[in-house]
Image (cartoon, rainbow, N blue to C red; front, top):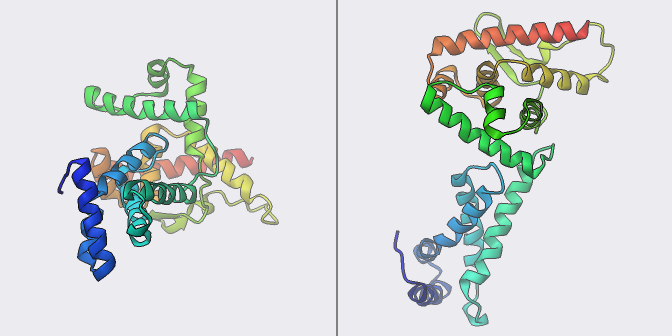
Length: 258
């Protein structure tokens, strides 16, 4: 990708706009986008520090804003294109983040601690070839174990879990998480929200690795092979953890009902 000095960038962008507004060629528009892609990178980098969204995803969304700015920019009005384009790029990213927003708003301090915990987990995996437990994470963050567990639970419960999520079990056939919490004594659908809350609580009680595998397989729709590759374990281990995790969920939900 070509990188020009700021002054040369302005001159070249202006020349390209004059040609683009005269001929309307896609190649000219793409050249303008390429020269001004740094505007998107800066905005995407800013927003990655404010949320948990992937940088590459924000780049793609920001490019849509940049294209809109290119289509609406007028050379005759005398505006600098960079000043004109930034609100479009920022607005597109903000709109995307609002659409992707979580049901539960997490305090900024907890969000920062959550990001630090991700780094701690990565360092432990590299250094000790394992994931840290809750106590080790809380000690590294210099907070109480109770607060860390509250933070972890908040992140897990940012979005409601659908009871219609498919559970692919080779032995039992296809079922859903809702089947695991079915109450034969329930006479109406009034307890649906209660069931969801109990299910979220049951998931939070699972060992970290088992819960992570269940989330990968059933919530992120990864295959067991893809899950194994992500976590650096065997497919057999994933299969066993899935089966064991579902058994524990079923046991936990059944115990809570009675």
